[in-house]
Amino acid sequence: MANLIVRNIDEAIVLALKKRAGQHGISAEAEHRKILEQALLRLPRKPFAEVLRQIPNVGNDSDFERIQNDRASQIFD
Image (cartoon, rainbow, N blue to C red; front, side):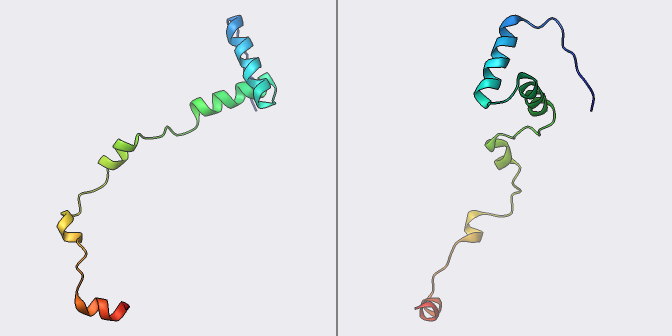
């Protein structure tokens, strides 16, 4: 594993990091690693609207209508 040194960090950021680490019950260093991992390695989530736009057009709604007939009613009754 590599080491990373970050210099000239504003004191407010350091305090916020320590506070957040304390809320999670971990060290500031562990919290720093966690933040870096989340920011750099995790795949960004796509907005739901974008996912819907990627669904292929496979037909009209009428192509998938459920048709109720007497024979089907007799089989499942």
